[in-house]
Amino acid sequence: MDRRIGLGRLAVVILGLVVGGVGGSAEARQSAGGRESWDAIYVGGKRVGYFHTSVTPLQERGKSYVRVQVDMALTFRRGRDLVTIDTLYGTIETPDGEVLRLDSRTAASKTETRIFGDVRDGKMTLTLEGTGEKQTQTIDWGPHVRGPYGAEMSMARRPMQPGESREISIFIPDLNRIGLAKLQAQQREVITLGGGVKRELLRVAQSTWHDGKPVPGMDQTLWVDETGQILKSHLDILGGMDTYRTTK
Image 1: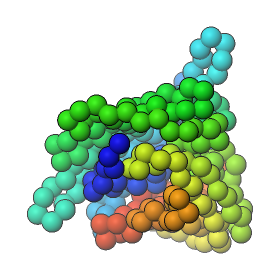
Image 2: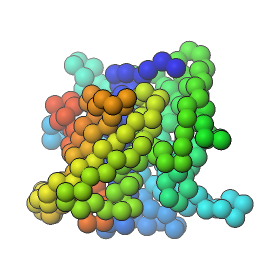
Image 3: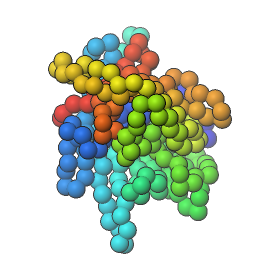
Image 4: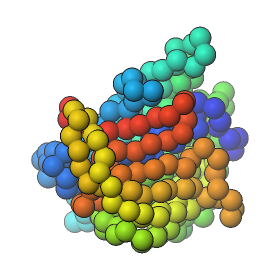
């Protein structure tokens, strides 16, 4: 299966910034037994888009599952062009995070792609549509593999402490491969959030690795509260991109 680069990679990187941040914080709203959150995206101090994340519990044949869905809308200038990226990403997971199904749709620069698949017998069979022809690929997929937001979901389930490090196996849609997210919790520091509100948050450095090498352009800094929710993040793309937890 061919790699997707450029705007496709950008969408994947941005998606990983905040999707896992929905959980028990005051900024995340409980809804019908599930949870949802909103995050604003800024480039150079200007708002360019948002995320809407929802986590919904499901029951099927007496078993419990979780549906994670993220809607992203992003509009920015790239040179003289106005670029719009709309992404819908969803997974069906077990309550502890094991991914059973994924479905990702991205519309960027008048091109729409979809990647979807199910896990059966330790294998994920992926189907890619939108490249002129349908392509499929099967990769090994153990119960420890998480979605591209697995690192953030890990912190939401079990908050980190200063000095703690953590590694999580994640799926990297841009590569259609399993990689490794490395988290390093650093120090607590006072951060200014939206509206000038100041909070003491834990600074966490995150990098993504594949085949023993860091994936370029995916290093980011996260600021996390005591419940493991990402209230701010920073990524060195487009001259500096920041996200902030907000309300609808």
